Length: 112
Length: 112
Image 1 (tube, rainbow over the protein chains, first blue to last red):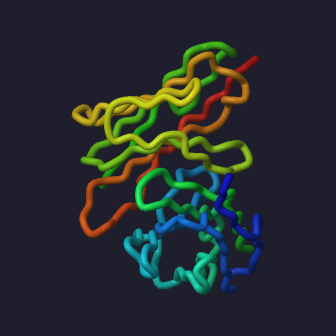
Image 2: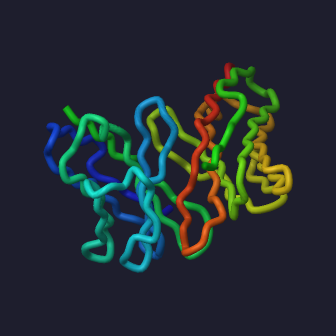
């Protein structure tokens, strides 16, 4: 069964460093998403991406965040200068034109 | 601001019991999702609903658009059903916006 793949599963970084979280969505999917979940809290929407551009972003997704689909298969989330409060589980998801979202297993980001 | 409220927050039941988890939301939506989050953190989509009722195996999801309410039922519950069940809605917005708003989840434990 096709799946959304996220790497790495756990990323540890120092405050102020840049991190790139990587996702490989399901190959025929058209819509891509990033979500985050701070430990013990609910899942929050960050950004959606369609047709090579951001279609919606939340208040959380400020200038420190960016997304890219550099090569037609990968979908990346970059955090330019990480803060302690960026520590969370980050989930990538994708879907076809209609239908359910398929989630990756997540990347746990720990900012020290 | 849309709120998604789930009840109960925590539920412990015996194997074989019929389980009901409720979700209420406060604005118009185009779709409602039920998701399952395993102890390791991964998220699996169970249902996407815009009206009526859907069934998959022992899981049943219903939605009442007029009352802004949905329920997830599990029949003949089993310890492997133990997980966090999350309700998420796609609020009605223009411009292709499709970010989800999530509830806090219901932590379900099924005891043998």
